[in-house]
Structure formats: C-alpha cells, structure tokens
Length: 309
Image (tube, rainbow, N blue to C red; front, side, top):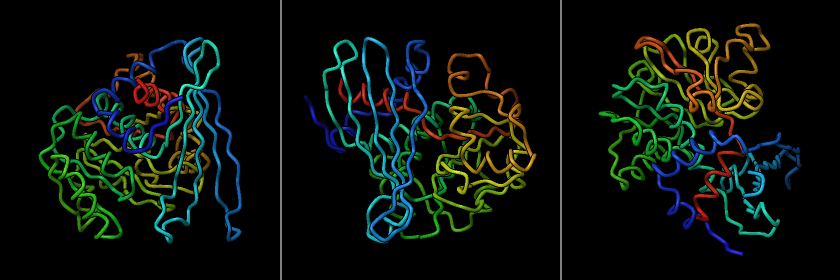
C-alpha cells in the first residue's frame, strides 16, 4: 500500500492533467458516484460539525471513498474548516492500493472542476478574473482559471485584507500576477469571470452588477444556509451545475428554488452534459452564465487516480 501526503498529492496534480482527468472521468460510462452520506457530529464545544463520506468507482478497475470533516469554528484555532482523507482500492480484487491526505486533493480538484466548466462557459476573450475568498481553494481558483483563460487582470477580494494579500503572494510564486481588491462591488461589475470560494451565509455577489457576458462560478456553499450570490444572479443567468442532486442542496440554488424565483427546469445542464457536448455551453457573447459546484465523488476519483498513477 502506498501513502501520499498533501505535498506529494499537490505535486502530482498538475493543472492541465487534472482538468483532463476530470473530463475523461465524466465521459466514462462505467464511472459511478452514489449519493454521499452526511452526518452531523457535535464538536468538543457542543457545536455542530459534519462528517461526509463520498464513494465512487469504475467497476472492475478502481473503488475510492473520501471521508470529509467540516468543522466551521476551526478558523479560531488556525486549522482548515474542511479536512479529508481518501482510500483507493483495486476494483478487480478489492485490495487496498493506497491512502492519501485529501486536503490538497479536494482543494485542487474543486478548482479544476470549475475550470472544466469555465472552458465551456466563460467568454473566450475574458480578460478580468475576480476570486472572492481567501481560503485553501482561493489560490487554486486563481491558478486554474488562469490556466484555461488568458487574463490581463486578476483580483482577489476577502474580508481580511491580510489574507487576501497572502493569496496574491501565493499565486505570484506560481507566476500569476494578481492584486487585492478593495471594493467588491466595483470588482464584480468589471469582472469577466468571478469565482467565489467562501463560506458565506448571505450573498456577496449582486446580480444587478454582473456585466453582459460575465461568468459566475460558485464553489463555496454546500448546504441550505450557505449563499454567495443573490436572486438577481439566477434571474439574469443561464444556470449550470456540476451535479443536480448535490447542487440544489446549496443555498445559492435551494433558496431561490424554494421561493419560486427559479424552477428545476432552469438548471439547463450539468458538467457531464457540457463535457460530452450534449449542451453547447455559452451560446452568445452577452449571455451571463452561472455555474454552481457542490463537488462529486467522480472528481475525487479522477484526482486520486492521477495522484497514484
């Protein structure tokens, strides 16, 4: 059995290869991702934390499961809110191939899945990128979106300016020049691509500010109470999701669905539809596109296979 730590996983998951691996996994008819299981678990202080298990497999080839903990109060003790580990098994005989830390795997595949969507939904001539948020996924969002589009201007906004500066420094070390945004609304109004990677529980992005042709990428929210965009965003945009089953559980879609602002029919395609060409993606230069990612085990499986290969 092999064991990989976060640094080894990060070194293995180069952006181009990871984007391609996710695309190929979504095209594989034998790839299966059953519904995740989620449990509420009290932390040491009696507050709600969460434990999730996300399995996936390709019959006869590989089986994987990622276990995830979500401890919302971890910022106060300088630990990540989301932590994870992954097991990979041989699908032909059930033997354990390896185990890896999955913090970097999750952060990188999450951003890469959004880039898979952006390849099909962002304007080809997009020149301004805004990343909203300063957590573990934020530098990856900058780097992978910059891998699939050639941006002239990259901005990072966060409630904590020092953390936003840290993201800017991190991506500079990888060769991408960025700056800190001091005015979220102004940056939203100017951006061609907006990628949100926050744990926000009230909207940060105002749909009225989105310019024609903008692409909005929402990564952070995963439950009903979390929301990064307001109702005007879904009113104005063509809506895409990574998977319908999980995306509709996040507040960015669950809340406007419950309020009747949109209906299930307004979710026009999922990521597999886009990759397979069953939906053409962006259809005009002025179209506003909206992609809600909630994460799927197939993305984890694609990343784990690439790391262990």
